[in-house]
Length: 190
Image (cartoon, rainbow, N blue to C red; front, side, top):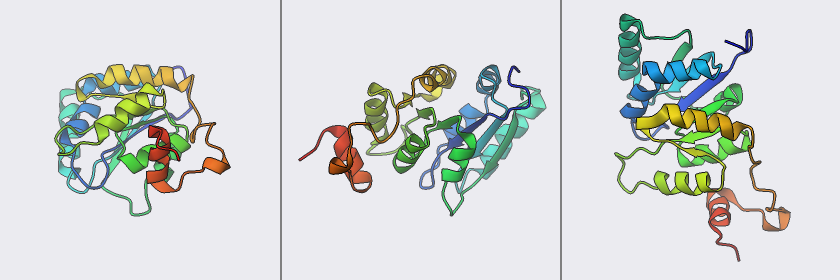
């Protein structure tokens, strides 16, 4: 690793409301862990949700048995009632699949963000959000089938990160709450 002694963390969250087993499996897969190492990551921290502990431990154990785990330090937790912002700040490296409200927090912390929509959800607003924010070059819209490619694109995004809220959102146009920010981003201004 080229960044000896320097910690670089990939923080993955599935959110609090719905399980996302596909994402847990994908981020613990040997190819993704190897890709993290290639990009000089030293830690992988997974927020696996209230019903994901068994799956997380099972995937971790399977990788260890096969000998496919890299030298990444991997940890996980269910939920944190105080929120996820502290983990985002700690990571300041990568953040994968946050829920919609967490996307905005991650953007404010200036984290290269991969948004992986959970296609198993009904009325999936995550796809529209991921596509709109990727088009504006704020995030990378990732898919479970190609997280390694999304990681590479996120590292490229790191070099040209935009600040959030956008520069053109002066105090006279300051949005109120999530709805106001989303209205502004979607162009619904009075």
